[in-house]
Length: 338
Ligand code: G3I
Image 1: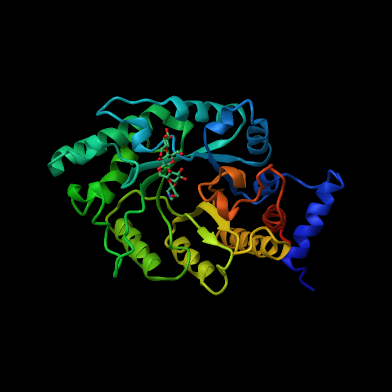
Image 2: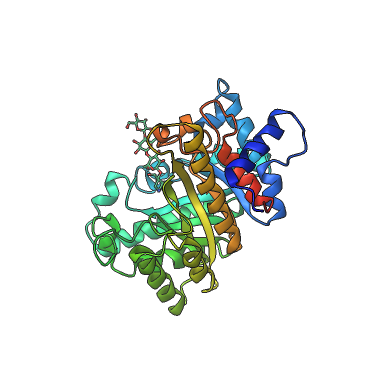
């Protein structure tokens, strides 16, 4: 008989609470499955007044993403003047703790400084893009070997064309190809990803991304994989959405698959046992889908609920006080093959 994930989560948590000491951490369990597990981190990592944050990351995660510290606006607020404060600190912390870093993100229509919008010709803009990618990737070198090269370039408009409201539209329709080629030239050892939201299911947007990356491959563009953000709510059904089939079609192209920004908001009513169990079910199903395509990373968008960009929805696996939620047990259970 298959044990329901919610019951399993309760058993797992019971074991943890009783201090059995026999359960692995997430990163230990993930290592046995060949997948990185982690989350987006912010400056709280260095906050002595909130030591549980860094302790949780160090204990449970094998990969971190700087939630905002590596965006164009953070790194190059003025033309060719690079400021690496938080990004460097995060990368150094990761190295000290044996944790890998996902670089997020080189080209994204959001969090772009005003001066980029003032560039008037495609040539000027492309030069700025190439310089940004080259400088940033060269700075981090082999300390950051996973990059979201282009993020959220496909729009949600009917037919899912490239985003018209992006400052990078001016660079011409081949700007995505060019960005990946510049990134590969900057560090041929780095794994290069296209990353987007709303494409977890079999749907029009994932079809558009599939066509995009297949075209890139046919043109010899050096793309390593696709990141599926997975900003979801607890009503999402991995099964009914066709998520596994969707991830498989990308995997079948020879592309690596990662879940890159996982969070699952609770249904209305908040943190009731039933809602937490539903959230746990989705988390467990997401990890199983990820493992089903031999994904290389499962990254959540934050550490604890209180620090989430969607804190109201309590979408993460650690609660406000860093206690393990049922979703933690479901992720661990999936990693252990339960
Ligand atoms: O740090 C400044 C602070 O100095 C200022 O006083 C304050 C006033 O608004 O803003 C602070 O910056 C905010 C930053 O988060 C740090 O909290 C920005 O305004 C705010 O726009 C920024 O939001 C981030 C957003 O991306 C835009 O960059 C979110 O934290 C971050 O979670 C979110 O992450 C994105 C991924 O990168 C891509 N996929 C979707 C995901 C969620 O939107």
